[in-house]
Image (cartoon, rainbow, N blue to C red; front, side):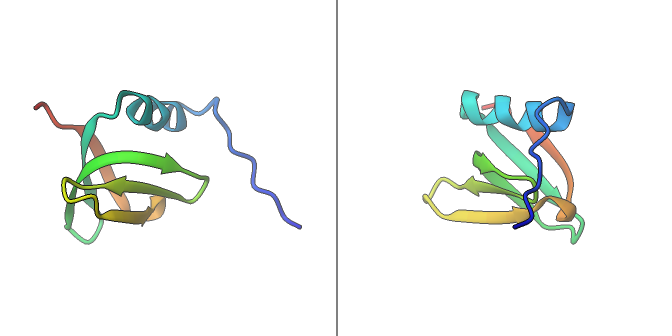
Length: 73
């Protein structure tokens, strides 16, 4: 069985973990141009999952993300 190491020493991993802990509302800009807004509820080495204001969960491949930024409420 192949296991992928989840490297918490990487700043990007730590940043997303902080967003999860803070339950911060974030904006994801995808490489397709789509814009997703919600709270990050989990991440793994390949994907992140966000939940929007309607409790709709969306799993996004990290490779598809152009940027993530906090949204000021």
